[in-house]
Image (cartoon, rainbow, N blue to C red; front, side):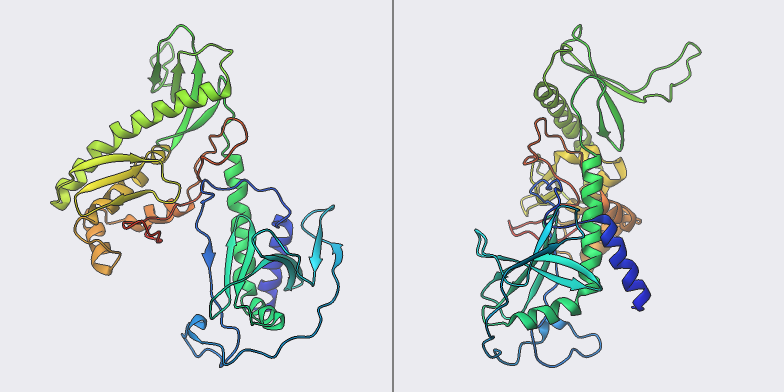
Length: 370
């Protein structure tokens, strides 16, 4: 990549100000979003064209290093008041050390975790950059590996910061008139103590019978104006789960008929790490929070899971099955990867919310299938 492009990427990271010191909302599993990893060899021969760096094993353990410089503090570009620790490690509760590296002119803090492995691995998540390395690997080799992956690291940090910004913007402020996505469009919540239960109004008409464009969907709840955020959130969530079951069932029947498979049961899931799952017995599980997304995205997940009743894998044969019932599935797949779920916590506790694209599994072993 040209130096000018690398400098631009570093400048973009600088303005996004992503760091371990920033407060970014965690994903639901604080999945939230599965972290992206890129293992890199610590030493040995250079990779040839098209060769995976992770496949190159280190030649031999390096010689022990001398004493490390003392702990120093210096200003950080991440925030005016923050400081970063460099270059000696600071022990953490999980055995990791907080360090810093300069990538294309920008200081980037990271957590270093010594682990039983043969190569250096990188993980970029909402918490920042984390490095896992064998115990015998010298800090100099770790720094070299970081420089080799500088472009990838900076790009992923920028992406994580943007995702955190979008997730925070999607927070629901529970109260009369609050809004959240439902089937890909805004749903306005209105408290009406004269009602019992909940009632959906798909759109209001003016005196001439013209559909109003101010609010297409209104959800009226039989709650008083004094209802707490928790009461409103719980009532809306229960309603959304009922709507999810009612919406998913006919879509499952539709695609099952097209694929010629038998679905023996549909169950709603609240999984933090996957949109859905399928097993050989014909039971399909779908995350109820898919109801926030457009019908096209829901259809993609439904078609994806039902296709597993024919191919319990993600081989080319599997994707051919998906394409047979959804020719443009790639478009929905890309949109799902970028999707952000609303933060539905009512008291600042994000432990029960998701953002980004969850992983997907069939045998209780997470794998990126969407």
